[in-house]
Amino acid sequence: MAYVPTIRGRRLARELRQARERCGLTGGTAAELLGWTQAKISRVETAKARVTVGEVMELCEAYEIAGARRTALITLAREAKKQGWWHTYLSVLKNGFSDYLEFESEADQYQSHDVHLIPGLFQTAAYARAVFHTSAILRTSEEIDRAVEARLARQERLTNSERALHVRQIIEEGALRRVIGDNRVMRDQLHHLIKLGELSNVELQIAPYLSTNHVASDGPFTLLNFADYPDVLYVEHFMGCQYYERPEETAHGNVVLERLRGSALSPPDSIALIRQVTREMPDETEGHTGDT
Image 1 (cartoon, rainbow, N blue to C red):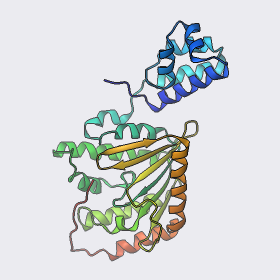
Image 2 (cartoon, rainbow, N blue to C red; image 1 turned 180 degrees about the vertical axis):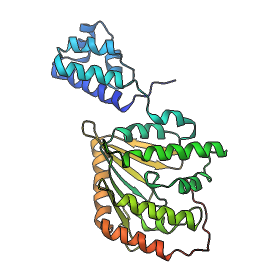
Image 3 (cartoon, rainbow, N blue to C red; image 1 turned 45 degrees about the vertical axis):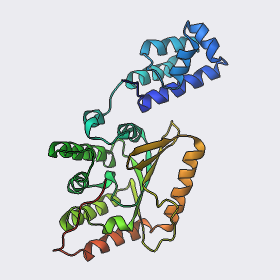
Image 4 (spheres, helix red, strand yellow; image 1 turned 120 degrees about the vertical axis):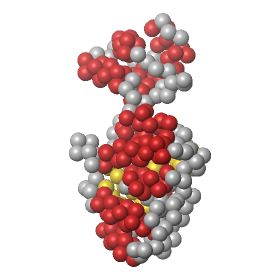
């Protein structure tokens, strides 16, 4: 199986490249100093190969890194090998989504725009189950149960008092009015959305039907911000997902999100609209299941 770096592994690779550059060493010079090949230095610095704790110690010696900085790099190398909670759910995750969860688990801020559905980070178990029932990759009730478990486990950072994820979420009004499952499922989902929208670490905005801003009408996307790693832009589509990490790409994502926020309702007005949609829902009419 090809090596897939964790976010800590990516961070370690970046730190090691910067350490070499601060020493004024080229990749070739560093390789010669260590008795490695230049290709190995390149693989380590681009997170294309796993780097061991022993190799990090060698690099620290070559780059004259000592004290707290050396300890931090060695700790990062140890943590880079650890697998996240989502690895037990790989069989029920959309292609490429485990990589996204790796990024999200380390992010400090999550900024997102969703068009057709309540986003996964805010879904109730019943709503998620109704969505998964239409999935092309989940074929059994056991698989759906596992996918729901994974979705709920992902949400724990919303209420984690030690390291809560700061969330700025924009949802199109249509997602509130599109009944997924049935009216009871949808009503419970909207109540849950209100509850989460009132958390101190969550900024929830609804883009109303009357909004004239259509800069991101193609589909959902998420921008993840980190304290000590470059931003990551994640774009989801029906075949999987795509990541963008170049500064000009993530900067464009920021611009689009700012425009969407400017035309969306304020957080208090958004909560008011969700309450209104809840009141307008009929009790007896059943809805339909949605797409993934």
